Image (cartoon, rainbow, N blue to C red; front, side):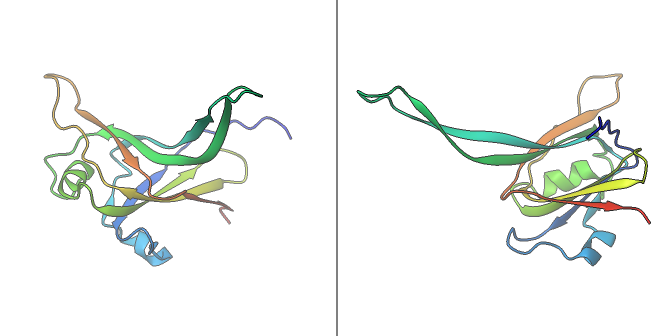
Length: 156
């Protein structure tokens, strides 16, 4: 396989409230609870490895037991707390609620490949306000309630 270098362009980040065991159907994403695409500057789906250490015995040393990763969705962007329908206010108002996030990352790779990641998360509020005289930004880590799904497609 040859080297692959990706850049995300024109990505979308959308949220829908709903229980972890009931993922939104495709049509739900056309009218999401909030579309944060124009405010988000970074969207990363992060795996956090889970390991446990089995203690040493008289016949062998400690061993690490590797478990399934815990996942989180890390977002950063521009605050829009003055907008009642913006991402900053939405995160603030729905803190601790179950939701689904959909991140679609069109790339600049030949063939217009697209990756879509959908994850069930618990909403956390992002930071609000900040230093004088600078654009206000936010960052937030949303704990995933299950492993995200990843699908690939090509624009026709």
